[in-house]
Image (cartoon, rainbow, N blue to C red):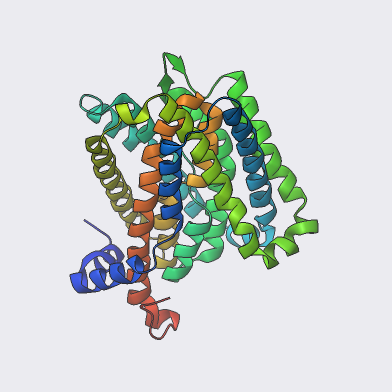
Length: 354
């Protein structure tokens, strides 16, 4: 049984509005999906190998370090202070990201392990161990008219803790070629020097460069996306050389799609029930829904590169790439529904589009 807000968001206004919201969203799809697909195709047709793979690997590591440096510099202390008082909400979001998701991931993975390829099971479980997204969680909370300062705090806290928690969870739950992943000294050093150190240095440098970054968000966006595309190209090149498309067929891709839908539906339904149990205001409920139901491609791809053998990274991030797009579709529709339901209360005339 859903909360009153859940019933209004998910059903009472009929399917026509949902279709309209979906149509509006589909008309403006994120072109990053096309770039991701093109990158996978390029790696399939022209995989980098040998010396080129070594150079691309180093370039990817530098790009990831720059990416996390910029994320640290973009982290606003004022926004975090504005939302940090809502500690109960933040605990619920963290519980969704690092307790609910992993438990459901283990349940679904073990249930499906008898008829799903092992690399899909590993990748599917891995995506459930990741932190929440930052930019899109905040954007959808704002679109819905929710508590944006709390979303900034929750999403940022999830990503900071995820740098430590995700490798620990990987070490506890995932085994690669008979060895436990995520707990080797090399993996720990990779996370510390490639992700945590640049993030910390970027945040310390915020007083010097924060203003420049805030004024040039459009210019800096290619760094975000370009670094991910470079890592994806490098990872899929190695995977192609290792025979990923001989091990993965269209039925496997459909399985990933179906399992992702099931996982996301279970998380959203559970979070709606928890929001009702916790008597959250609807503005805070949007934070739990959007921050607590998302998984970060930006964090997940670099972490996979640091935690797993290079030849297996492409297979492992494949479920994450598909889940990423599904969560964007679902959250866009839900955010529009919240905005439509509470537009008058928020003073948003013509609230159905933004």
